[in-house]
Image (cartoon, rainbow, N blue to C red):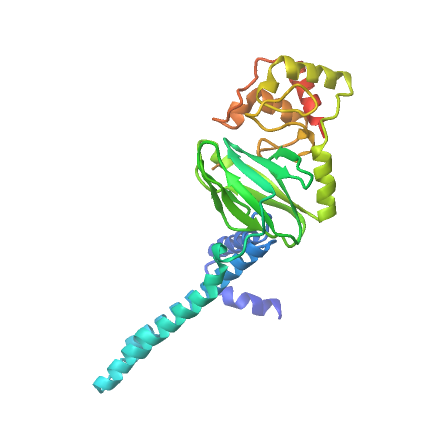
Amino acid sequence: MPPQALRRPLKGMRRGVRPFLALALVGFCAGCRNSHSALDPAGREARELASLFWVLGAAGAVIWALILSLLLYVLFFKPRIHSERTASLFVWIGGIAIPATGIVALVIYTLPMMPSLRAQAGEPTIEVVGELYWWRVRYRLADGRVVETANELHLPVGQRTDLALTSPDVIHSLWIPALAGKMDMIPGRTNRIAVEPERTGRFGGICAELCGESHAFMRFEAVVQPPDELARWLGAQAADAVAPVTLEEKRGAELFHDTGCGACHTIRGTPANGQLGPDLTHVGSRARLAAGLLPNNQGTMAGWIAASQNLKPGNKMPSFAVLPGDDLRALAAYLTALK
Ligand code: CUA
């Protein structure tokens, strides 16, 4: 198509409007393809939800176009109805039969998608707990061991995994748009959701229920891996923490225990066995810090320890701004080395 022909439909449009239209289109299209998009599905549930969106959207558009054209027809052509029989035919066919068929067809299409109608995958092997404001993730290994991590949910590709969801205090909602729908995490009960990822990759997850002042900072990543890679990762996560190597790391380890960090955090293989905060045994292996808020490196780790309340107001870790810069850097060096 020559460029001239491409420009023709836009010809009548005022020049000032075009950039806004282009921007809106770019925004719309970009929104459909990213790791947080429900319209770029990477799992069975999300794929079904995306087709539900498109089918119901298309059905809505067809119904809207039909009604609009009938309305325009009546307005412009003013048809006359000559008999009672024609009038009641209009009501029965147009007003009852067609809408009822449409609704029944859509119900038949959508009903089998309800998760409660599907068989569960089995006993949940992963437990996710919504905390203020982060995600506690527990894996039950085949040999009976339990591995606890935070803010990363590792899943096997091509397999259905059942997640058990709970919360100790307030209601959260776990949502990985590219993999499945939302499911609430409610104190005092265990909800279940099944996910079946269909391709590998890292997919964004968020909390979809207003849970407090830092609700917007409660993110995580679902890491979808081939089963053998996942098994290797789980094996590494089940191991105790590595010992500090450099002088700075050793000083950081001492500070960690002297400052009392172990009252809230566990580092397996050391005396630190607190349960309130995230397990830090392999914190250095995680891609991000503070439930998706920061990239994970020595600088951000030191900043997080010093200013956690400024970065994520209302979380349960106090800011340790009283610590001198050298101590913060040493602590961060020790923690980021815990791969
Ligand atoms: Cu947790 Cu919103």
